[in-house]
Each structure stands twice: as C-alpha cells, then as structure tokens.
Image 1 (cartoon, rainbow, N blue to C red):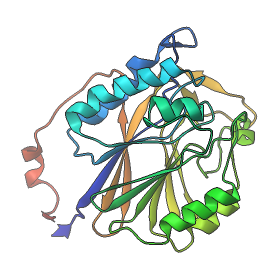
Image 2: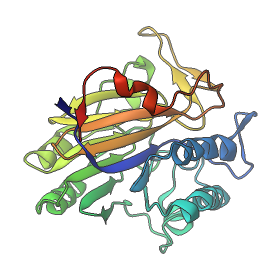
Image 3: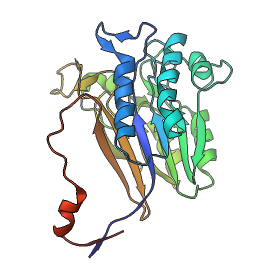
Length: 284
C-alpha cells in the first residue's frame, strides 16, 4: 500500500486577461469570452478551490471600463463559488484605475501590494509593475514590506503572486522585459514560509525554482506565445489558453496542474471504479 498526500489547499490561477474597453484585442480575440473560458475550466473541474489568483495584465491599456468588465465577469463565477480573489498588477495595468475598478479602494499610484489569508494559508500579491515600463521590478521598500509580512509564519505557509516571474526566459526577445531586483526578492524570501510563487507576463506556461521555491507561470487567457528558437522573435497564438491549479499538500509538497481553457473535444470519460482493480492500494 502507498500513501498519497492530502491537499490542504488549492489555488486557482489565471493571468494576462488583457481586457479592453471595446471587448476585443488584436481585432479578433473576445477577451471576456476567453477569460470566462478559463474560469469555467476551473469551476467545471469540480476541484475544491480555496482562492483565485490573477497574476496581472488584467487590462490591456488600464481603461476603467476594462476593469469594470473584468470585475463583472469574475463576479459571475465567484458569486457561485465563493472564491476570494487576489489581484496582482502587471505592466499593462494602471494602478489607480485597478484600485478603484477591482479592489474597491480609492485611486492611488502606490504599489498594489496586498495580503489575504484563507484557512491558514497566506496569499501575498506583490506589485512588480513599474509605471511606464514593460519590465518589472522589486525595489528596496517593497522588499522590506515583503520581509515584514513574512516575518511571522502562517499556519499553512505562504503563496506569493506577482506578474513578472523570476524564471529564465526561453523566448529570448522577452528577456529584456523581465523582472529586475531579483536579488532583493531572493533576500526577502530567505528563511521564509513561502511555498510557491505564481506568475504570468510571459504568455506561455513554464516553471523553475527561485530561492528554493517552485515558480509556476500560467499562460495568458487572452492569447499565448509560442516557444521559438533563440533569436526567433515572438509569435502570438490565438489558442493554447489554460488555467492552473496550485495544490498544497499535508506533507509539505506542492503541485501544479494545467486545465485547458479553449474549447476541446472529450475523447473518453472513464468512471473511477474501473481503476480500482489496477496498480496498488492507496491510503489517503
């Protein structure tokens, strides 16, 4: 008999919805529909999700109407599911408009760094946007703030959500648009209870380890970017969208799974009982 760990928490993960006031991106992408598809994939899976994290570029140009649309579409799901939502700001976002349109707070140009706790799991949103720039950053003041938040461990640890992920960039054209101040972030994470980092920005799924912490990057819900050879430029694709589920287990491990968000055909559906005579017995 083998023992499978039990998930104490699961976090739904979406990114880069790029809402626009017109509802259309690049002349063909219906951003509300593609974002709704990602939320529907999470909800339709039946996986018990404790919180939803959006890792930035909620809007494409920071328009007030775009944030209103994002809020409306999200609320259509969360009114049924009860998921609390954590929003991280991206380089396409405008802090003041995002604060009023999504967070229900007064307009401010200050970093939108926020903390929530869900049944003993702390989720921290770190604003890596630099107004007027595409690349991201963590400055000394933010690093100090993060260090103070992490000074007291949470019962089930911490998940850090940010837009610009601290991972190696496979699409070389995007390396110049990366996260600066990674040394400050690494120092702030040393000895902390951060169990996973969730990011976006790259528009393709990838993962790495940073400061001993696993990093998981969700592809965009608006459009994705295809991996190419070094020096191969950037190829945007109207497809391959996905949402992610971060699972945190009772033995300290974490896992990350992707759910296709675009329409697709189900080839087969097999009842779980069929597998009960296969393999080995499992204890939970």
